[in-house]
Image (cartoon, rainbow, N blue to C red; front, side, top):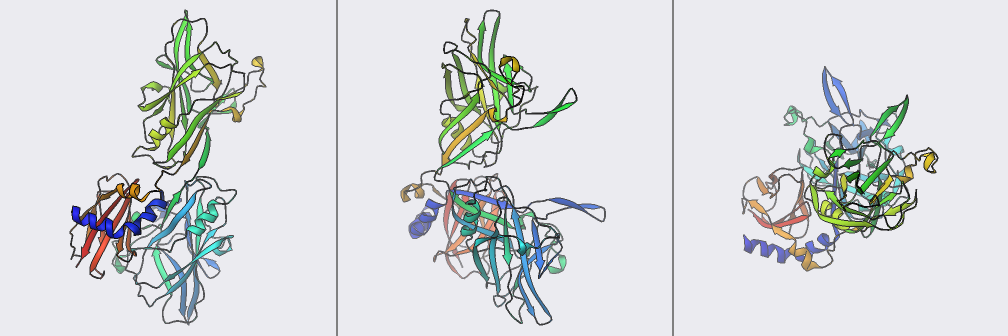
Length: 542
């Protein structure tokens, strides 16, 4: 095993190293449910995020397959166009798109003589809407960038196939001035008139509603693993995100609906204070008659930073709710919640009972504070980086910070600082205007970039051998076994010319099977990416 692994590294090091250097982050998105319909009393999940157009008419939005290309028979000539929309693209503006692909699963087998000319373009929209039966797919504004997908290979039913690299299209969308992290992205697969033909010159692939018809060798079941997928490899040279505490609910205040948030909370000693208040207190109240340790929890949602990012710096910014002198020193320790995707705060669970990061930062607040002015913590990048590096972290998850007060002993000063909460009503008695000020809610600032993988030697040391069997293989498939079944994985089977001959995406599980029955005998390499770990293994196909 060790000898095969070493040979694979030597033979493919030049081939793989540039890709490993460039492709720091991986984003995958699948077509997802948008609605349910009643089908004879049974509620079926459907999606309007994949759609089909035949000439100048939208086909049914809910169908078991999608057609793209050209139907060239003399009696039935149709240009076929497909639209695909992928949601919540957690790629920040300014990212470099290293490569991108759409993966589809064949709904019908096709010969290599059946050639479909399909032009892929993006919808030139900042945040793409879903498809409808009243608007044509090809009437949407298009990106300047487009890619020709000449599908001239044999297709086997139910097997995955990928487009050429569409990074230029994705890059153009991400570079739009109105692009924001978590926006939605849509693509058009445009057929063209290829003239009369004995072949259909179209390809059919699985839709979201992919019911595998038993008449075609299927099992009559929906297969979520066969929905269209978008795969994007990207890098971030230098990115910045600013995320405020956000609305979670409304409450009735004397017949008036008020927006509130349970994503900022306060604890006094061993009791949760009211979740909805105009300020947050952290530190220590040291007066002999009123000694209280004050703890704050703040949760920030939908953090777009990918797992394994290098956090260059990070800060919490708050706005003073009261003026304080420099003599009023508060000792506040900032930690993160050691969870992959944190939940909001409640009145029944203590803030400081949550699991805490090893990393912690002391914020010694010894400066004068002026009411309504912003102040920021010391750099908390170590805390953020520990959370982002967690195995279960994904871009789009939520993270929480905990500001821990401590017993500073009896004092003539309060040794605490009060700052604006989400419900920050500026009290007229304190010089305020009685209005809520959304600009004064706590903000999290993160500056981040891709990890440093500029050296080939660093890249190679991050590659592990992969468990693959049987090897050599003379059966119809090869089994790849993963160390961690809870993570998704992208698997490539590559020939020695560097061509990807098989590609599979696993949503999780201990193993995947690569079909090899129709492959020429020879030497191949299996390459897999799971989380931020690359795997490589040489295999022989007989």
